[in-house]
Image 1 (cartoon, rainbow, N blue to C red):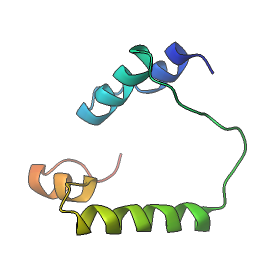
Image 2 (image 1 turned 180 degrees about the vertical axis):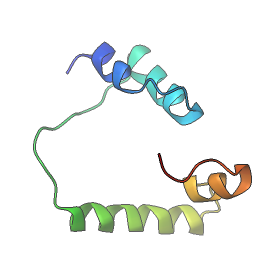
Image 3 (image 1 turned 45 degrees about the vertical axis):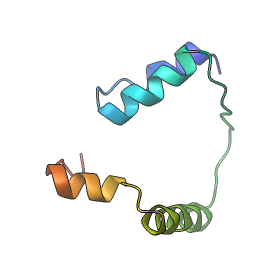
Amino acid sequence: MQQHRIADLLRDGAEVTTSARAAPLDGGMGVVREGTTASESLARIYRRRLGLTRRTGQENAQSLIACTGARKSR
């Protein structure tokens, strides 16, 4: 997929997607794979990432939503 097309997918105006949108437009590399991934596999990956984020004291989406009162769902 071309970088400008990836950037077009990230146009909701949120701060996080604005930063993510800038990466491919500035020449950043990424991989978009076609196909599906089992939800159990994704849940395991995100559970590990959240645990690492919490252990290292980094902010995550849950803490940002709690602090800002941002919407939890669309």
